[in-house]
Length: 274
Image (cartoon, rainbow, N blue to C red; front, top):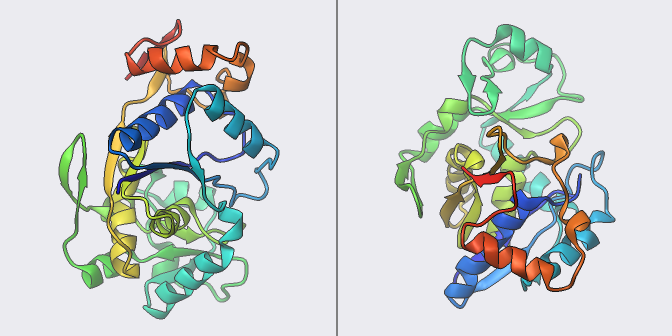
């Protein structure tokens, strides 16, 4: 059975880009007689606003979507910690005390997530791991895992190249797991068979495929859809104050009409699909 998911973070209200992503995931599951699940990614305690989870559900219901709830990330901290300990025992994680300024000053390459970490703390381990983040030694991990592949429903077969992003943080200084580790473990725990998300996360899939191999997790397929942008070509985003779905929730049928229009490629004025 196909299982898709929508996994928003409660650090701001949902906007039209979220609506489109949820509709795509919902419809792919519905068309195959599968399940569409909602997971709240609230691992970032400093930025999370618990009250938004209820608003997310109201938004999805307004759009006419149906879903199954699964546990939020904040309930899974022990699982994240256990996975990190396993990777440490495999000799694949190392402590890092570098700041963003340190990395920006030392980096010589730019990857999908910005300046590529140059391996400073891998070459010169800090005196103490107290308060450190933990990074994955990607080269050693790839050697252990061997060649890996994954399939995107739109882009086709891919060879995993997690090395393009350098040694990424898997355990943050302020949280028990990064997005990469938490989302990979969550999708496996929730039985997700088709990871549906925006094309901006395409590069992240390379590292997620590596983590699946290292931790013995099932391998889903992926569907990286296009992104909604404004007239300037800028992706809709919470941090840029894109209009929220909650502000649009007027008539009970308006949400369903909006969802149907988006399915047909018709978006509100000033919004395009890139």
